[in-house]
Length: 153
Image (cartoon, rainbow, N blue to C red; front, top):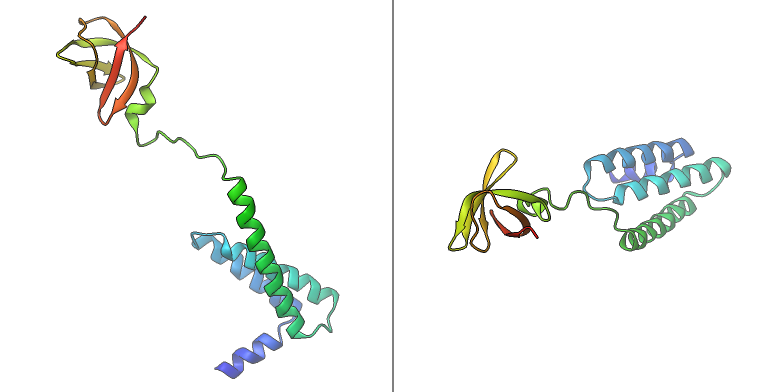
């Protein structure tokens, strides 16, 4: 088994590198990180070098693969650290935060700091200064499932 693996490693042609590149990139789809992507690209680069220089020794091919892999992984880590990207919809699971700044009408008076408003198809408990039904309020915050409101000015 080990002898077969050694034969495979030492006898890898340029097209073998490209197949390895495709396999590594396919693995990337199933992996949670981007490690296999860079290894696949490195294998592709070595495939191009092996195609251009068919007499290149296998030791140099694997050295190039290791070098390009390390350089591309380090470069990608630095790039993604400086450019973390856009985080989509940060309030997706914090529904109350989505209503901050919006204006609503009280459907239940605020007494002793508690009342209710109607938001879309849901009644929300609110906290704020005592106010009467029908008054306009603005949501200024959220505490779990309770919206913090102030009178509209």
